[in-house]
Length: 231
Picture (tube, rainbow, N blue to C red):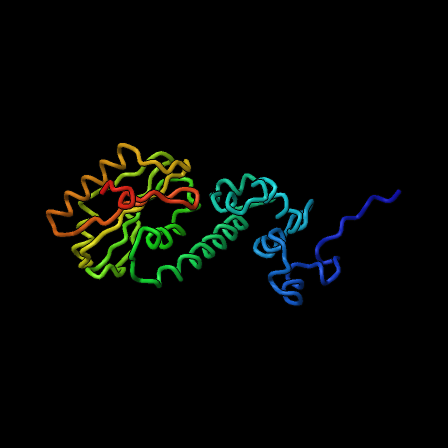
């Protein structure tokens, strides 16, 4: 019996090729694997781009949120994914994150903890390490700047209160909202989180800059120090 000859994507019917399918049927008609196949561009000797994408998603339990947390080093461990493909995937996912954040940022004014969460969450929701962000506001609580002030490990990050208030003075901000993520998924503030909030609030009082809230973000949820009466 002749050895079975594997078909490449070029041998498929036009309507089954991801790029052509997108053109003729629209982007909504494509599966996540087909969209990934377009991003990585090609497969390898053993797998088509779509099959490679399906394998990659399978390694992430078919969960795009898990894929979004992968680093370049994580992705290149997957057979068939080299540095170039990994960079393309990371770039595409980051672009999606930024697009998600953009309309929220245009809201400009923060009136409650939910507003702050919607603005900062896209920046930290898929991270496997802790990052500390500060939302700088003017007297009317309109956004002056949103800034990453620290990146750390899985269990913590360094918060330098001096640099945060130095930036506040340079930006002319009169109010601040502190935000950081918990990769563990635990929303409860640690003793260190409480200490940071206390120190920042006391420093702000001396400089007439109010720390309005401190948000802890995890698994698309948040804990608000202000809402819980802890600030």
